[in-house]
Image 1: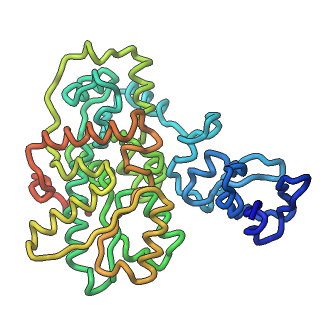
Image 2: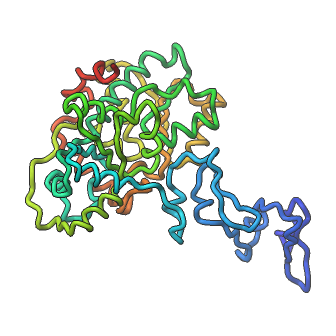
Image 3: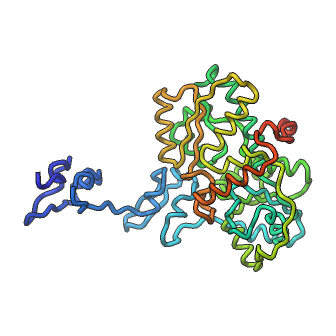
Length: 380
């Protein structure tokens, strides 16, 4: 009774030496039961922050005890990058290539994800985004939330057409790390993930339809978008990807002070639902709203998961048949895109700022987007 850790150990790895519990590391399997049972909190499980944050268990140790990444498991979510206290993990930047394209005279258009709100500090108000980006050399700025509206409409139509007649449930497609994780760990579910293009791709195609020979730079919170943009089917749509952190570096290098930048026109072409893609639950909420607009009597059950560990649990429930008829939303980052690897602000504050930004949208629902008529053209 005095040593519950010893009693609960399944491998007999704990013995009492001079009245104290001692763990035999040769026998220990790191199950953690002793730590849970210890009434004194005397046992601590030491784990690398990067490995603890990895939802894919992709980080291990080599023969010298150094951290290694298993790229067969990695989905490029970037959570290890964020949680490494030593700055030992970095993704590949395209800042140099973007700057060279601008200096060369290319027409470079920034497609900015809705999570930008609040990321650059209080002096960067939404009406200063476009003027500030132009000071960096960008020709124009377009909201990726426009593409989110189009993605919403597509996913709503997919769900209404496929569930439950042809498939038991449908999963959203906009988070690339979640989508890759689902296909790696649950390959049988691949057909159940919506075939809708992501907001980044839809926005990029829309820009290139309207502006021939331009270069598109996606600017957002996500490390996984760099992997997505490198795919053979997408690289002609999205030329470069930068995170908010990288763009902030460009602002600082140019010594741009947002307080001194004159306000320009507000971004007004995206709906509130499209802007809401940046937070957990926002994608599913937008799709449900669109379905109810198209078919008011249609009932839609929803489950949303944030963080890859919770996403895996959700898919295990789906595998057990407990989520039939559901719309499943997965977000690799806890809190959604506002907590992505390339963000600069606390996710709670970023979410509050985004909710205020949503309230300023002229239209609320994705089906009200004036770009809906271009959906078929973007698939050509």
